[in-house]
Length: 431
Ligand code: SAH
Ligand code: SF4
Ligand code: F3S
Image 1: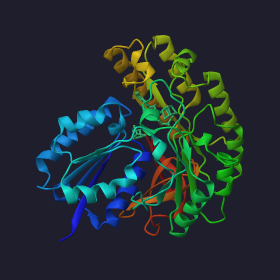
Image 2 (image 1 turned 90 degrees about the vertical axis):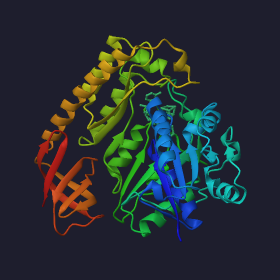
Image 3 (image 1 turned 90 degrees about the horizontal axis):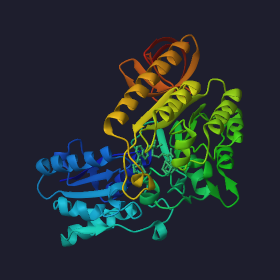
């Protein structure tokens, strides 16, 4: 009888990819993925704690899993949430049915912990205090489940300590992988047929290995074979005008940039410890647009940071209006224990809710307007999904486009004319 596993993944792409590595460890031990958590012998929750909502979800899920899991199944909790101050202790007290708790630095050891638990039946709680014993080797070969796209870590951790953010505390200091390892991974993935590679790091622009920088890495990944290269996330303080030139010259890089601004007010940006002003940000955006007028821009924006006034918020709206992002990820600031912003004077719930509602409406109109403007233009869509003859994919500027085709297959690059827009959604026809 086969042994099954089920993995729940919360949070960012970093976690999505780490779950692929956990799946690799499990499959190497003979476990197979299953569709329903009820059938799983091993249930893994790979958690996130970037906002309070993420944590509430994990506890809710644990409660539901407890009532439907089959008898004797092993429950593993890992990922960022376990790494927070006191979180692992709270978790094991609150959820006695959780068998194994692992931190972010020792995730590659899942296999050893499972073996030990199966042998002894003794609960294992092992959360390391820092990355010092960890390494930047990719110990597990991932079982990839992101279709045509393959994620590749180029670095781990973060040194920036934005005052609202928990990530540096739960992921440790910045560690960069050797450039040759990254290049070898990408080469191997391309020869396996992946059509898109996304490089991952909390701040890819600060990648450094020996004397090589992020832009050197991008140049090394240039290729005559057809594929699309993306990266995330960029930090406005470290992004260089050279990057715009490299995208412009490249045959493989996506003409898109995710450049999280967080806020439009200089006072708030300073309180967030972001190390740039709104003018510096807008100047960088202008440099990209000068060279790449059609570049797809996206960003993360937060409302309700401690002490944010109506005027500060209006500065955010103003910046969003000036940039006109194609895609915007909008968040309500969430207090994270242990971060400096947690100790600052907080805003009330209604004010934060009112601001996020206004921002969402504001951006909706911009997305709609930009989508309408792209009707009549041409795009090269990389097909990532197909249902009947309906194809879905992203353009070279990262716009999502649907079109119909009997012949196009997943993984094809298809030239399409954009014929209609509905809200922010685009549809087109093969040309
Ligand atoms: N390293 C990336 C992503 C970090 S987390 C970066 O610097 O952009 C992704 C997003 O979550 C952040 O960009 C931020 O907008 C949001 N975020 C982080 N901490 C938050 C908090 N305490 N409350 C609400 N949103 C938060
Ligand atoms: Fe968090 Fe800032 Fe690091 Fe991004 S750059 S992970 S927002 S501390
Ligand atoms: Fe990602 Fe959440 Fe951790 S956003 S790095 S999974 S706290």
